[in-house]
Length: 268
Image (cartoon, rainbow, N blue to C red; front, top):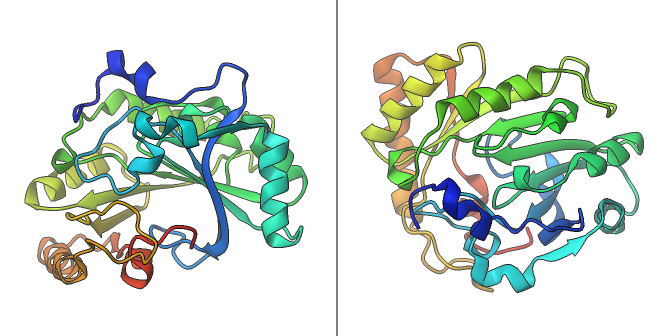
């Protein structure tokens, strides 16, 4: 199941019929390790379930239905209480991740959390648009490149951007919608050309490029097993050289810094 197939999606998503949010893990406070918000203090709310199966996925425990029993369906209020327990009640940026968090009913959590001073960022592949995207503070869309062995849907990506720009959500986010970033994982030249094609479809949206971890490991307690840090560093250098050579001076080249610091350790 390496190719995105809408007929398989219902078996992969982990939706909950009661309207609760299926949670894989909640952890922090830590800092965002990648993308435009790199270094920002945050608590991660990782949902369970995904409509994709990327060939190099490094969070299979939040994607593979084999882990479905570990995804706990809980209410928006319970999620927010769990975050407040971690922060001592202090508001913080909440990063909604996955899997694909767009599958889950996150609108009430965003609305309730913003009323209490929390801000929200989401990371999604841009395959499912939700009206509550307009209520987010930050929206990172990470279209998956050819090396992921998934299918890119340009219309679905455009729908996600349109939903975020609608600015008519019921929450307390900006009426102009969230700050949107396109973030492209890049393994090779084909991925780089894909990123160039997609960014030209949506000029004006900031772009981040980051090297792909080509040897992702299953999570281990010591956090380091299987992570090819030398390979990641070499791929980052290659990306910098390519951006300079192509004069893409409007993009940012960032590492997956959390991988360099913590490897595959969970909960940081």
